[in-house]
Image 1 (tube, rainbow, N blue to C red):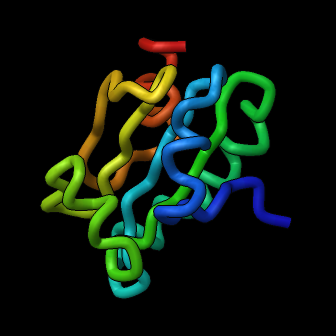
Image 2: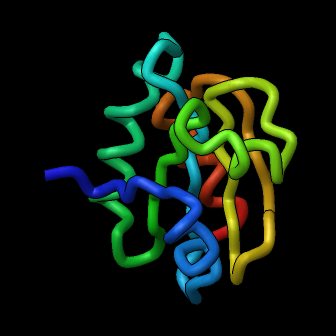
Length: 106
């Protein structure tokens, strides 16, 4: 079962505004690097579920959410705390790179 949450305009604001940090993956079905990152994000979502929520925004289906943050390249990973953007990373990250990115803020 997937540990990541599919985000859309109906649940985005409530999800990223929670008291738990939220890592949002902006991705698309046709994006090769996005497919490489997906299993890593599933692992991190499972391993760190007590500290972090991992959500996914399909930029083709949710263009307005991508436009809010001027997402121009995918995959883009954005970390939110209390509804505010804390940091972002563009491009495919290895698991160790992703964990290092997260450790700076958790």
